[in-house]
Image (tube, rainbow, N blue to C red; front, side, top):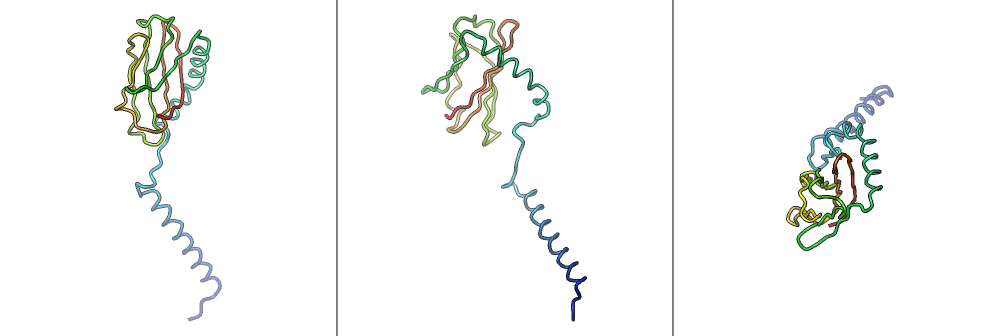
Length: 148
C-alpha cells in the first residue's frame, strides 16, 4: 500500500498530538510532579501587600527591632526591651518552602521579651519567619529567612 503525502501529514500530526497529550496527562496525574502555589490564598495576600510594606516601615522606625537567635532549645525571638510586653500581641508564621505540611503559626505569648519556638517543631533547612505584631495601636511586621 502506498501512502500519499496528505496521509503522511495527518499521521505525523496525530502522532505528535498523541505524544504531547501523553506527557501532559502524565505530568498532571503523577503525584511526583505535584506543584503547589506558595500560599493557598495568593490573591488575597497580594491585595494586602501595601499594608505589609507600611507595617515593615513602622518596624524600621522602632529604636530596636526584633532579633532572633538559635539556641539548643530552638529559636528565641527577642522583642524590643523598651516596650511593655503586656501590650504586644500578634502571630508568628513559620513557612517551610520545601514542604507546606511543616508550615505553622503560633500566637505571641512573651516572657521577659522573649518568645521560644521549640526545636521539636523545626526541621533542619530553610525557614521563612513572618512576625505580624501590634503594640498599642501601631502594627509592625518583621520578615526574615533563616537556615535552621
